[in-house]
Image (cartoon, rainbow, N blue to C red):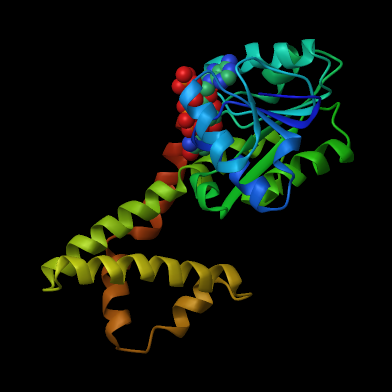
Length: 264
Ligand SMILES: NC(=O)c1ccc[n+]([C@@H]2O[C@H](COP(=O)([O-])OP(=O)(O)OC[C@H]3O[C@@H](n4cnc5c(N)ncnc54)[C@H](OP(=O)(O)O)[C@@H]3O)[C@@H](O)[C@H]2O)c1
């Protein structure tokens, strides 16, 4: 159970809330400085046992609050956070605008909106943040100090949040579909399932790390592995003629439009 005032109260101990707790504790935060508010007693017990954090069934006061509940519950939670005198609230709920957060939190609590993605579960996420006009550099730095525990953080104007959602929020789904298709193709090409599985998983990991750690553009990296008239060139020619580039444009456009629609 919670004792004293925590540095951070995390409301919602589900997938994302737990990923953040893991990232913070792994990154050196004292677990006793974190209180997780979670309705489910089983999840509370697991959080206490796995990470040594305080837990509570009801929202408790802290220096700042991170809201990781379902979007429909966020405004109510922000109002409660503000009612407890907490001065900063950071929401990771998809589609809930800074305006909605700030209106619910009132004038005494600064509201910041974040859009993380699921690689946060393995501390390799990317999160975009934006804040209300009331937010200062210190408020953004506070949000970054929390979210950087689960990956890279970028600041964007809120007008770019639908595009961020379409690229990075939904992006893992695009990558997993490619992996799924490649896995099926690998087996059709004669590889046993267990071999295909290892090849595909390690391919995405290795290529992903290579891309993330390189200062070269994806285009340059692609050119380097493509000898004229070689095997990669033969495969890429099929991707190009199938219209992969145009498809990616349409994928992002559709996801961004859906994000805008859901935010209304
Ligand atoms: N998962 C993602 O990829 C992702 C990416 C970006 C943003 N997000 C956002 O992150 C938020 C959380 O997503 P999630 O996947 O972690 O969901 P989740 O696993 O369902 O976690 C939410 C947790 O909060 C609990 N909860 C709900 N209302 C509460 C309250 N008032 N006080 C305390 N606990 C409460 C829920 O309990 P019950 O189950 O009993 O309701 C649940 O355990 C969502 O708003 C989502 O939009 C998620």
